[in-house]
Image (cartoon, rainbow, N blue to C red):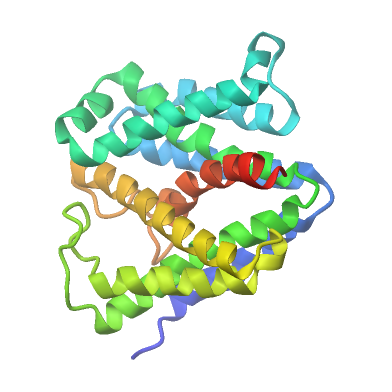
Amino acid sequence: MEFNFKKFFLPALFFPFFGWTVFSKNEAFFVILIGSIVILGLMEFYNMVEKEDWWFLGLFGGIVLVGGAGYGYPKGLSFLSLLEIKLIISGIGIFFLITSLFSRKFLSLITKISPLAIAFGLFYVGWLLSHLILIKKFDNGCQLLLFLFAVVWSADAGGWLIGRHIGKHKNIFFISPNKSLEGLVGAIFTSVIVSIIFRKCVDLGIVEAVSFGILFSSVGILGDLCESSFKRNVGKKDSDSWITEYGGILDVFDSIILSAPVFYYLLIFYKGA
């Protein structure tokens, strides 16, 4: 197999910088990084659904969401800091997000009506990704983020490598027909192994680590399929071309977008973090 220099050069530059912001004691660096990712992701989303003329509303809302997660919401929006409200908003939004996988009419309705598209983009990119900042606020937030990214992104890598080399049974997902059964198994297996290796970051036992690996590889795949449904609806292969050989910001973070809130609420209710 020919070595793809471009495909591995970017991670070699990005991940050390990303890791530095995660482990930095100055929380502002991580907030700025996530804010930048959110802004670029919103630009991609509104470009995909052809709502570029509304970008200013989306970007303003994204900045409010990221700033609120990092430093507290504006006085009039303080109710959003309540855990129950955040959970309800996340739950309802994720329900509609998953619904879009099975109803193309519903997805078209969201993307064609400008106010709905703006609101849905804010939820999908701004609200969900802002949970990464909330995770970092935990006492061991750096280790928790390390666990999350390692488990979710290892599933992406494992699924891609195994599916590329031995994937024969394809079309298991109508939204992403190139994904294979072998790649799915490889993603889950890789995620479980990495979850066991990094289990001390979340203080997990072996059985718990296996469960977390299965859960977050599955949630990550679901997040990938959600983004694929948006691209399929507008006839695009990648969300954008910001990142050579990878596509856009949403293509890189699609599995994290859905995994971050699930991990956050699981930590609160299951681990009492």
